[in-house]
Image (cartoon, rainbow, N blue to C red; front, side, top):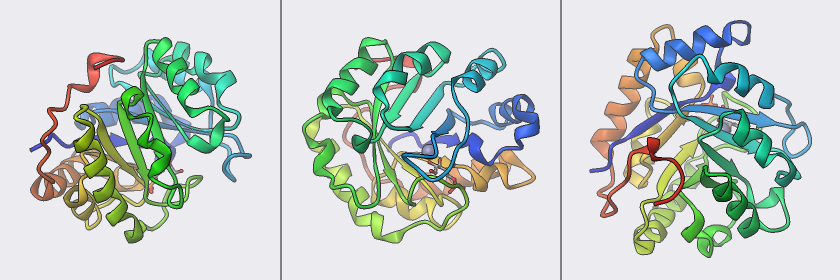
Length: 238
Ligand code: DX5
Ligand code: ZN
């Protein structure tokens, strides 16, 4: 069974106390910190940029999972890498040459990920799997926290799990949006091994309990995975 990894999304944290919030999820057992960067153009919301990553970088040992919802994305990859990203996730729609953007991320020494919106064909990632460390399936439309999980994405998660298994590469399959008790299990059963959760962690009074509950529900349902997944702290590459 794959080890389920949990990545709390900072978007749902108390922005007046970001440093404390990050320390709290680290102490509560998070595996990653998920950072949602939004530009008000690619998605209809604005969040934060590299200055915030840089400010938080010194206050935690959690690896930074940086979800870029900005277009064009290419001009900002180096800035996010230097601000402290460990993994950079991009949408195929955010630039003209996904393959080149992924090469650029790996060239910066970072793990690379591709994010699929609910209507983005799986085929968008099929021919770049050799450059990818994580594929993230959106289970809401990107832009806001607190939306309802889209069950229509479950068969897509299963199909993506099949593609990843066939690739033979140690690619993580993450889900993002509406992940909570009740949806974590079905997502894991379909093939997800990494859960991103904003409201279901930061919106609760006990972060450790929330993280443990998600991990337990997903662990029970976990899809058997023939690919031996690496520890996420290994940096870019296989
Ligand atoms: C949405 C973001 C998500 C968001 C998830 O665009 O990509 O990471 O924070 O929030 P919840 O878990 O509340 O749906
Ligand atoms: Zn996200």
